Length: 197
Ligand SMILES: *[C@@H]1O[C@H](CO)[C@@H](O)[C@H](O)[C@H]1NC(C)=O
Ligand SMILES: *[C@@H]1O[C@H](CO)[C@@H](O)[C@H](O)[C@H]1NC(C)=O
Image (cartoon, rainbow, N blue to C red; front, side):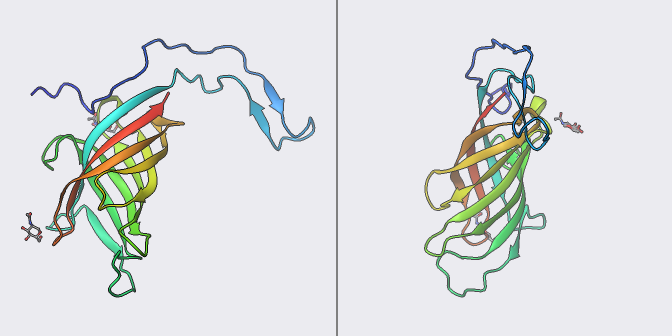
């Protein structure tokens, strides 16, 4: 199958791009003799029409072997915790087009996650997805959310981004593709829905 469509961008908007070049007005919020707050109305950053892009890729969180992509950095001091409450791992996980780690690399997930729930498996995920492919190369989105890792589909917010994803917002859906209970290695399918300009 030809891998023509990289990262599966599905642009939900029409290609009509209207840029508002109209002059913006400046309002001094805190009075004429204060520069404490300045609000600029209209299209200060020459933003284009907001669009929705869908990405699908696989996140490889590999503890085992000579080249781990994730390392435990804090161990929990609580013994026999059902949820692992307190542990933290730091990752630099490859993001690939297919479930095989050898498939095309399209980005990296850099950040950390930790067990933030005492009662159940509930991870706090703090990740930057750094894209490496095509026009997205170098742009990032930031995911900050709660991951009940044992559930089939977990939703986490995309809180913003850089580059093409300035002012972005959205969400990801994560679902485990494979998990090795002995090593902790996991491959997770991510579908990201990102509104950006
Ligand atoms: C992405 O950008 C980096 C740095 O500018 C460059 O070295 C690399 O070749 C680019 N990758 C692709 C796939 O375009
Ligand atoms: C799970 O991980 C263990 C330890 O690294 C390894 O020996 C085993 O082969 C792995 N199982 C599978 C199904 O990959």
